Image 1 (cartoon, helix red, strand yellow):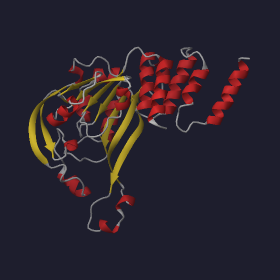
Image 2 (tube, rainbow, N blue to C red):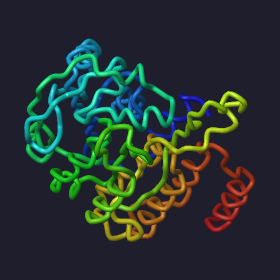
Image 3 (tube, rainbow, N blue to C red):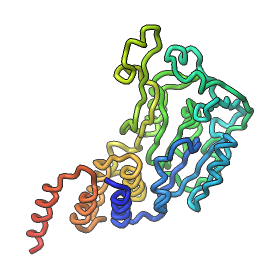
Length: 307
């Protein structure tokens, strides 16, 4: 489906749910190397964003593209102590952790991009101490191995958020980097369950014989990717209505988890907060790969029930 259909679907969802405020997103590591997954929500005035980016050049690029619903702050988010920012040749690899040369050699990847060209001493701030954040529904974080340190010092934010979109690693590209299982273990203590991987990158291992393989067919070593976790699964019906409304918007626009959206709409319908089943069917009409024949049959059944 095209972008116009997506936007129409979000409007239908918003009008059906009627949230009290914009969906609030905290973006830790907002370096605009790639489009953010929430950009379309922001452009449609369906979300507000609190972004954090300590790299001066990346922060400046964000400031040069302002949005009334986005606040960008030059803070390094962490454990509240002073740290060393390792600025790499490619800014996307810059981290408070030092690159791990042994793993880079093992992979035969990214050595030149992860070369540290400069270091800077930075004072980190704990996420719970950021006064500018008014609400938080989604925590999006990509800071090259520093995610666990942020979560350890964000108890209040995690208690109020409904979802986490975090970069996770299968192998340590940085020295002493916490891995996927470390993040899952900590977040589970805050009642978050792994919902899906948005993607997971894999690469071929380095060897003198690797040249005999067609690389794109033999990328077997998992490296890193993005994981989405949701608070309250599998008892979504116990969550407050406003939290569920924003989870539904995030599930559609960012997670592409339409089955999750429909589960939330079912909860609202059973509570009597959505008056007619036809409203949900109108949303289903706009979903990619929907079963149009089933939708037609259900509409006929509902129409007969009202005549």
